[in-house]
Image: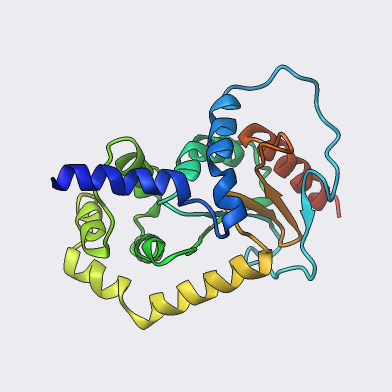
Length: 234
C-alpha cells in the first residue's frame, strides 16, 4: 500500500510540480515533451532570438550576488521533473560559460510540498555537500523514485554523503535557513518566475521554456549563452 501511495504521490509531482499558477500547470506536460524532444542538439539553423518573444526583460533589474561576474541563475526545485530533465543541459551550460560568468541556484517554493527541498538545498550548501549531491538528488527522486518527501527523509539521503542527520535537521530548521528561504522567495517573485526551470541572466533577462514558443532546453541554453556574451561585452 505504501509503495502504491508513493507512486501516486510522485505521479502528482510529475503533472503539477513545476509551476506556480494554473496556466503554467496546464502547460507542464507539453513542456516535458519539449524537454525530451530537444535533448539532442537540433540540426535547424540558429534562430534570431528576440527580446519580448523568446526571452523577457526584468524591470527593475534584480541585484546579483556574483560581483563583477555575469550571473546565470537557475530557478528550480528538486521536486520538479522538468528540472531533472534540464540538469544535463545545466552541466553543458556550466561547461560553456566564459570565465567571467557564474551559475547561481535558486530553489523555488511554489507550494508547501516544495519547502523541504529548499531547506535541504540550503543546508547541503552550508555543509559543503552541494557539488556531490545536486545531481544525485534528482536521480534519487526522478529515476530511482525514492520517497524523499520530508526533511527527515532528506536528512537520511544526505547522511549517505557524510552529513550527520541530527546536525542536518538542526541546520535545515534554523532561523538562518528560514531567512535564506524567504530571500529566495523574494528573488523568485522579483524575477517574475512562475514555472521551473527558468534561467535569469544578470538579474536582467528571464529565459523560460515554452512549447508554444518552441523554446526547449537547448534553445534556453543558446539564449542564455547569447545573453552572457551580450552582458560580457558591456
